[in-house]
Length: 104
Image 1 (cartoon, rainbow, N blue to C red):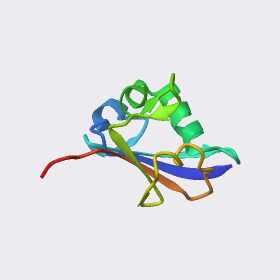
Image 2 (spheres, rainbow, N blue to C red):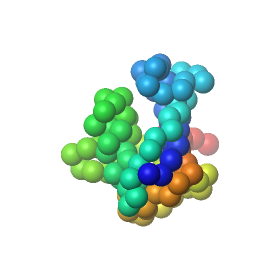
Image 3 (cartoon, rainbow, N blue to C red):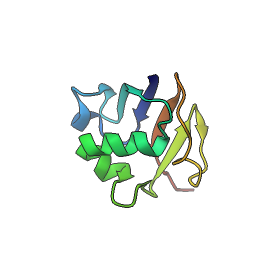
């Protein structure tokens, strides 16, 4: 089993309180254990299955992909949206989900 940290910066802290550490209403953190060979897609699909706020705001279970309005960081680096789903997780990895911001 690999230990992976998932961190969400999507104002889901209030909704995920109790299941996740919630340092603020906009931040939620959880350490999960995943089996060898688990991909980021597998992790997000499983979290969306168990947490409706994640299914609503992060991962489309029907399409099996992250929503277009979020960015996925893998170990503190922005991940190419085309590669994010197939990346196999390793022990100690960190996945951070941010909303896409626009402006000038």
